[in-house]
Structure formats: C-alpha cells, structure tokens
Length: 206
Image 1 (cartoon, rainbow, N blue to C red):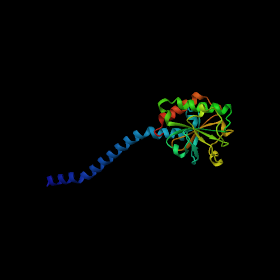
Image 2 (image 1 turned 30 degrees about the vertical axis):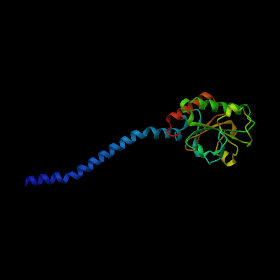
Image 3 (image 1 turned 45 degrees about the vertical axis):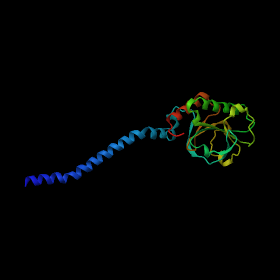
Image 4 (image 1 turned 180 degrees about the vertical axis):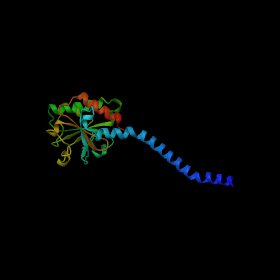
C-alpha cells in the first residue's frame, strides 16, 4: 500500500515540476533576449527621446519627422527621389543656385564630414535642395557627388525647422527617412564630424 501511495505522489507532482521547468526556461530565454536587445533599445532611446542636454552631441536633436518624397537628380544625372535613398544617412542643405560664401562653406563642411568617415563614408549621401530651381552655380568640386533637388514644394520645406532662415542650417535625415538632427548656423566642422561618427558607430541601420 505504501509503495502505491509513493508512486502516486511522484506521478501527481510531475506536471507541476514540468510547468516550473518551463517557466524557468522562459525566464532564462527572456533574460538572454533582454541582454542582447538592450544596446539597440537604449541607443534608440538615447538619440530620439532623451533630452539633448543628456548628450555630448553638437547638433540639435529634433522630434523624428517622416519626410514626404520629392524628386532628385542623382550625381550621374538620372532622375531619382528622396525615397530611393532610404537606408542612407543624408546630410542636407537648402540654398539658392547662386550659392554665396556661406553656402559654399556648408557644401565644403558636408563634403569633408562625409569623407572623414573613412570606410563608412558610403553610408552617407549629400543632398542640396536648390531653392530657386536653377542650375547650381557653386564650384562643381564642392557638390560633385551630391544629389540635387530642384523641385522643392513649400510643404516639404515646412518640415525643416529653422532658428532663422532655412538656408542657415545643415540637416541630417536618418536611414528610415526621418528628419532627426539640425546643426547650428556657422557650424564647427570637427563637431559635425564627431556627431556623424557617433551615429554611424551606434546605428545598426544605414
């Protein structure tokens, strides 16, 4: 009789033990997932949601804004669009075709910031939106390799906040097509380079 009771006790407790083991296994897997995912989640939160004062970034973080598609001309001359550049970091400026000294400085800063990324430079593209829709008159060496936008609807321009004039800033669009960063007028080039390096280091897209 005692032998039968002992076997029944063992049999009755097995489902409970199995359930406990399953719960432990799930907790273990969730812990591993959390550890692996933490760097990506924290990186996203750091760039998009924490106050700018919590960072050493130079550019001003903006609330991520999905941008509408607009037409562009590729460096080789063919027609393309902003949406076709998804997957790349985009350094953007707005200026008229005559391109004064301040405009040329921005073109130079953007070109040098991209080049300074070394083996990662192909992850970055340059876009010049020509506000008067004319052919750029700046020295071609400054914008060679850039994408040119000569059809810039007012609704598109309105997506880019400016402290004064739109043409004073360099903007950064992330690989998902969101406007995310604005550099101040007359920026310090080495600090732009540092911001871009940091973004490329932590980004798993683009």
